[in-house]
Amino acid sequence: MNMEKTYTIIINQVAGRGAGKQSWEAVQALLKEKVVGFTFYLTEKNTSTIDFCQQQISMGARDFIVIGGDGTLWEVANGILGQSKIDSKDFTLSVIPVGTGNDWCRTFNIPFEHEKAFEIISKGNFIYQDVGKVSFYNDGQKQSRYFINVTGMGFDAFVAHKISLKRSKGTSFSYLWNLLTCLFQYNSTDVTMTYDGNEFAKLVFSMSVGIGKYNGGGMMQLPNAVPNDGFFDITTINNMGKFELIRNIKRLYDGSIIDHPKIDALRAKKIKIESSPKIKIELDGEVCGESPFEFEILPECLRVGVP
Image (cartoon, rainbow, N blue to C red; front, top):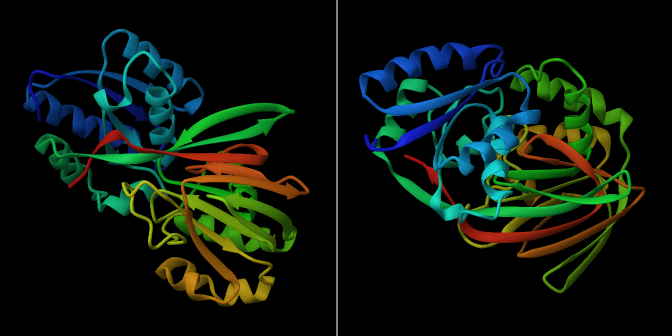
């Protein structure tokens, strides 16, 4: 850990059902032991985190540590990537995972124990990963956001929306429970997709576009994804019946789902998606808007701490 740096630490107090606050107390002691300079921001909701990050950037912040889950990480990444004054490659972003999903960390094998995660940060090993930029619509207005792990559309976003209406995101088991209970409330949708000059038109139940491998608290829907290869991985579940999907849930977790005959596994740098009716989208677990969507890959533009 560079003793000359001042780290900006974002702590989600309610992440992991309160584990964020407990982890911060332990990590604060480690930081003081290392005589590292730091400022910190405690948050319970993510709505103001992007603004806070950009305020800190304007004051010279360049090195961020997230103590939280995928949602907090997404907010901080958007704080860095959503401003244009400083090149995103000039920042570092590290994580001590305390959320319920921690799917971004799974791809990079970042341990969930905060002492071990802090040890990774202290060693100062970083790589540049790809970032996705996606546009969508809210109340007829086109908007855009960035993501560093996985986006889900159709059923995936429907489940994320249902979970977001609850006070707590719960556990990975509760995500699976919500997935099962939502199955009979959602129907497949006509989707037209163009990707790097190719065309795709099918009745689709769910779609994932990603840089990382995991979403939904450990589901491996994009098992071949490489975070810095300059491509999105795409998995579409095409009009699979409810009971057929239940029978294949194990394959969602071990990555073999892409071998199913009703699954398409694709790769692309630019993607356009239209649907009838409109479908929702979630970015790294955060529900943002509805179709149509446009995706663009931004190669190796974010420096992240990894083992």
